[in-house]
Structures are given as structure tokens and as C-alpha cells.
Length: 457
Image (tube, rainbow, N blue to C red; front, side):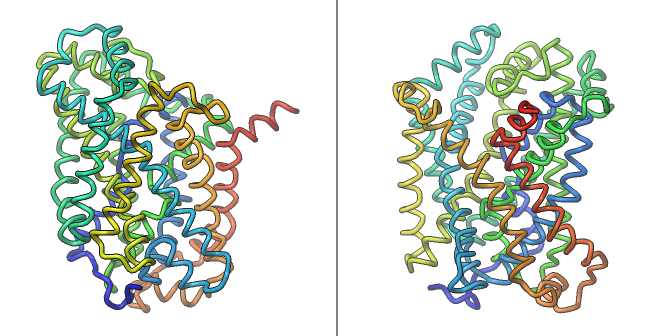
């Protein structure tokens, strides 16, 4: 077992910020946030999302940072170290398993970005109609060979970055990927807001209609806040275990939260003006990225250039997420089973490839084989995002409130009193009472139980 005192750390403050932002930022920001915003009324959803990020997401992120740095262990080992001989370790195992299972379908979607990057560079996306984009995506995603090949390539790319180490792999990659991601996102935003009729899209995103708010929108905003920040999947605990003793956990959590939210909002600025400019419904849904947006770009001057930039952006966002998810599982195997980092990484990558291939094929030749009406791809998505993540997030809050002495919590979060924490009591209150209840509501909402109860009455 790796001694926590010998644990490698990120090499710089910038590395800490960019790596952790990369951990949080992913397809959930670039695709899921705009889609959820469009489906839930626009600006009203955005306002609730920001409130949930600050009042719920930020406290839980700080809590995960505490667990990671205080234990200096992987997501599962952290709870074993802090509550030895108890069943609390199930939280950590749940996080590791969730990260692993998410990669089983996430790597497939990440692989799709490589297909579209290739098509954009070869100008294959030019001159197609909306129907052709839809048919081509269906044909591609359900085929046997190409999606599997791209999935393998993406997993291998992720593998080599992770096994290169925390400082030489993850931190180094984050230092160039995140600035490039932000730059491309800003460029696409500028192009989008200069389109005719863009002001309608901006009004949809920033001018709230409070009549749109109901319990479902509130719970959806809370769910998106936790999904966007990668809460409950072991990533934040694992990454914070690489933080140095002088890292300001409060400031880092606030900076990561702001930057992660900024990426999501910029994604909305990039998408909605363009969507409204061409008269497309903002609730386009899952097709938004691979069908609707290519159609939008196709109608722009230099449309192929914008397609290239967008899909490169999407690929980078996917890669930052797959790296952090892979690291959760790799760190666990490396430390708990005394494997070398390379062997642990190879083991995890091989298992991910097996899940990824089955997930990809479940979109086509294995589509008829379902569990509770869900394909294998859909099953992995449902079990992780709707059950495992909110379950883990809720228990993390309960664990710290029940098992950790407040003096120890405050000492860690203030770097032994050298960093002030003016709102510590407020943070402790939210973590103990508000966050678990809110996450519990998300959990019930995602399972459809709240809707079932409302329909009963």
C-alpha cells in the first residue's frame, strides 16, 4: 500500500486549478448544460443552476477536497483510512465503481467526437441536409466497426496520459488542454453572438421567465449542478489527494466552481444564439451536438472551419473527463492492490475497453438485448448518473457530519489556522442539513419517484 507521506502532488498552483477544472469540465458542460437549459425554460433554469452551484455544489466540493487531502488516499482508501473497520468505505467503493462504469459509455461518446473531427477536417460535413445529418449519425453510431475503433483510440489516448503520472501526465496535459479549450469556446461564442437574430438566443439564456419555474425545474437544476461539478464519482477526492499542504482548499473550490460554471454558460452563449438564428428549437435534446449543430455550422460562411473548432473543443472536453475518471480507478488499483501505476492503468484500460465495446455494439447489433427496457449503454448511464452519483454525494455529506470532528475539519480547511474560513459554521450547517436533503430530492427525482408521488395525488 502506498504511504500517504510519499504521495506525489501537483507541481504548481496553476496545475492544481487547471487539472481540477479539467476534472469537472466535460461533455456535461458543453452538451448537457445547454440541452438541460433548453428543455427547462432557459434563463430561469440558469439562475437556479447558479444558485445550486453556490449553495450546494460548492460546500460539497469543499467537503470532497477535505476528504481527499486529509486522507491522502484514493477514493475508496480515503474512507477506509478515516473510518477503519466500518461500512462507510462503501461510499468510496461506490465512487470508484461509478467512475469505472461511466467510462464504459462515456468513452463511446468521446470516440464519436473523433469521428466528427475527422469528418470536419475532410470536409465531409459540408453540403448535407438536416435529414442527412440525422441519418448519417444513426448509421454511424449503430455500425459495428468505426465506433468501436474510435472508442479504442480514445481509451488508449487517455491511458497513456494517466500512466505518465500525476505531474508529467495529468497536470502537464491539463496545462495546455484547458487554455486551448477556453480559447476555442470564446472564439465560437464571438461567432455565434454576431449572427443575425442572435439577441433572441441571448434573451432566452439571460432573461428569466419565472413562470417557467416549478419543482421539476428546481430539481433538474440541482442535478445538473452536481453532474457538472463531477460530485460523487470519486474524481474530486482523488485529485485533491494530490494537493499540497499549502493548497488553499476554499479558494481552489471557489475558483474551480466559477471556471466550471463559466464553461457551461459560455457553451450556452455558443449554442443558443446560433440555434435561434436559424430557427431551430432550443429543446433539440440529445441530437444537439451531433445532428443539430453540424447543420447550423453548415449554413455559416466558413462553416467547415467552425465545425473543426467545435468538435476539437468537444473532444478536448471529453478527454479532460476521461482522464479524471480513469485516474479514479487507476489510483484505486495502484494503491489498494500494490500494482505499479503502469500495470494498474493497463488493467483499468482493458476493462474499460470491454465495457466500451459492448456499449458501442448495444447501439446496433446488440440493441435488442435490454435490461428493464434499457440497452447496455443506457443502463450504464442510468445506474451511474441517476442512482450511484446522488447516493454517493448524499452519503459524503452525512459521513463528514457524523464521523469527522468539526475541529479536525476546520483545521484542514484552514491549513492549520493559516487561512481564514469566515463562513465555516454556515458551511458546516449546509453540509449537515441542507445538502443531504437536497441531494436526496435529486435522487428521488432522477428515479422518477417524485413525479410518481405527485401523480398519485
